[in-house]
Image (tube, rainbow, N blue to C red; front, side, top):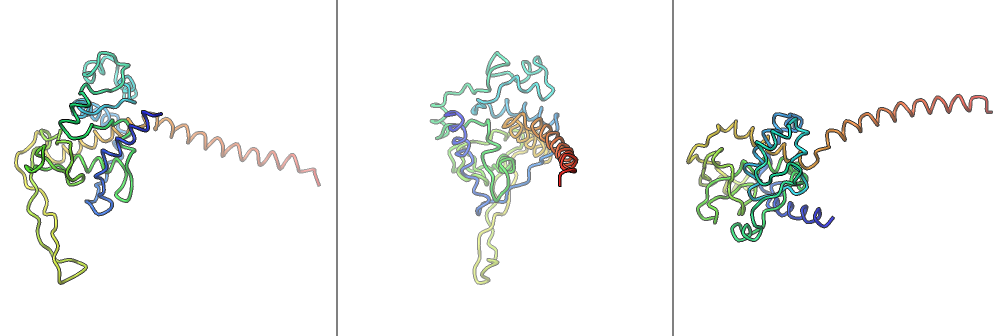
Length: 256
């Protein structure tokens, strides 16, 4: 229980900058259909172990659970098993937490339930993660050389930059304040490209969607089964109520 509470607290710390729903940027809508697409989940699992598991762990998720994604144990061993030798192990990172704190200023949180740790006016935790991972830009004034619109002053560098490329924030522009014609406000002007990545913008967004879909699935791998069983239980209960109602009517029919 202590580990679960600690993990949730760390996840909340990871998204502490997600004040987008209370005055920050608007969260983009995560493509929810990817959560039920096995191919997307398999690609998301590959991205997760290659780009996230270097610093973050998922200590409540075992590698062998990915057999639910139509992956054989041999496929998991050959393509996804980098931090351990046993398929039954949990997804832990090899990085020393103390070193990580020295490098980033904070210990990278466990990502087991990160997709369920934040929701609000800006959307769901998946919406936030989908926006966050696509909102990095170059900022030489930051220790890592990166900043993020969804999480200003973020400690984590842009681990997906080779895929997305590098971009900079354009200078803010002055526009009239819609609430006061006599005043002007500074408005975000967007991004300017610096160096292209290995993926086109649409392809990168799709891959980020796959990665977030995997994190959503990882937070509750049995969710699809739970929902499917729940539907059958409700149907059974509905049918049972009809039979019970008619049986009750027949039983008390002769009673006056």
